[in-house]
Length: 59
Image (cartoon, rainbow, N blue to C red; front, side, top):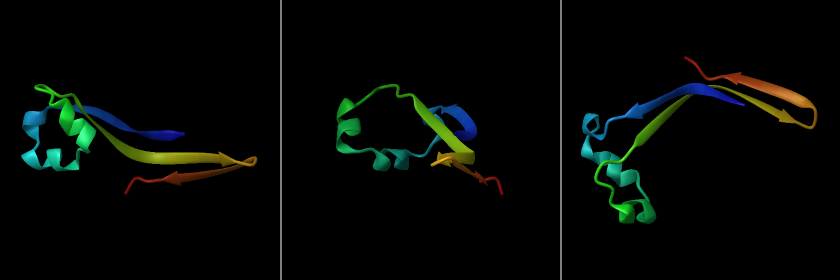
């Protein structure tokens, strides 16, 4: 399980360096008005072999 905050970001609010993080396929799509989604992880819970571990990632 992953717990966090999900936001839709307006590309005009970002500097142009975000395009450096795109791979070749993403760049080839060449969207005029892309949807940029940002997810900030707050906590994670993992179940493995009947054991549960939980980590709170908030500062």
